Amino acid sequence: MKTQITELFGIEHPIIQGGMHFVGFAELAAAVSNAGGLGIITGLTQGTPEKLDAEIKKCQALTDKPFGVNLTFLPSMTPPDYPGLIEVIINNGVKVVETAGRNPAVYMPAMKDAGIKVIHKCTSVRHSIKAQDIGCDAVSVDGFECGGHPGEDDIPNFILLPRAADELEIPFVASGGMADARSLVAAMALGAEGMNMGTRFIATEDAPVHQNVKEAIVNASELDTRLIMRSLTNTERVLNNPAVESLMAKEKALGDDLKFEDIIDEVAGVYPKVMMDGEPEAGAWSCGMVAGLVSDIPTVKELIDRIMSEAEDIIASKLQKAI
Ligand SMILES: Cc1cc2nc3c(=O)[nH]c(=O)nc-3n(C[C@H](O)[C@H](O)[C@H](O)COP(=O)(O)O)c2cc1C
Image (cartoon, rainbow, N blue to C red; front, top):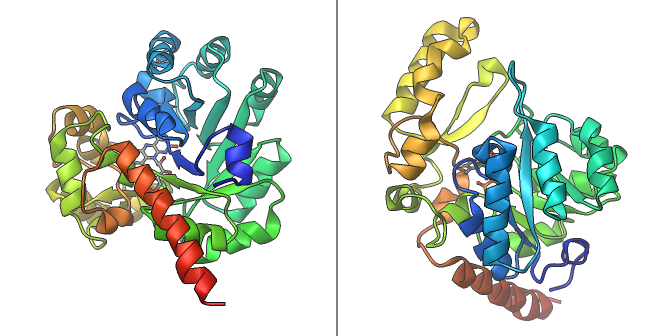
């Protein structure tokens, strides 16, 4: 399938694997790229430029296809070494960066000078337009359904995507709630040039996370995610579990007086325990409503091949026949 996104990134299929903390390691990124999509290493999981350098080199040993690095810009008292992380991305010849979180404008000149294509992930039309204005090449439009941080507007993709299509000149992919061929074809009908998946890629053989996490996603339904940290204006969609319920009880009791320190036990340092040690109930971790559409643990290649062949079938049989 050829779309503006496959052309922009030099990939075979219009499917991107979004950056995911403690999931987006070289093994997953390479598997997605080898299967014809665009794999993404999560920069902040590596933490330091030295560790990101090693992870990029590992990915380059596993694939000769294009892959990218996610840089999530968080508000922080002690920010990560973003200039150092960007330097190793450039020095290793990585040609795609997925930015997310705060506005990446100050880092755009360095990335553009190095010939890097920047896709900014954001949850609103106004932020998408801003991304276009600062020179991003594409946008990943993340609807309210998404795992992770859906923002504070709560606009689902059936509204958000056509709104983005009405306003944007640069291409965009649909993100949030994407799982299969139906998602891809629907996203394209709504104006997207492809799709970005997070949660669906965790439940694959290639995702370098504990089997318990994959099974937790397969066993979850679309009713099993919760929104946390809304009063901190840092809303996150996570998989429900007893730790999340205890966090939400604190939110209810403290209301607008809630401070990050009040819930630190349920959110800080949780990812390595969940993803590596296989303790999905250790705390709050991002997961999309799309878990309700995930019922198996295929290889990444099986998943992408299935999506592409079923998408062609939907377009050529069902849609073509309807007219
Ligand atoms: C476990 C997990 C961790 C994530 N970590 C990040 C991250 O560090 N940076 C980021 O930009 N997005 C992160 N995301 C969001 C994904 O890149 C993607 O936008 C989102 O999962 C799309 O929604 P979906 O889960 O419905 O596919 C994370 C998502 C999950 C499920």
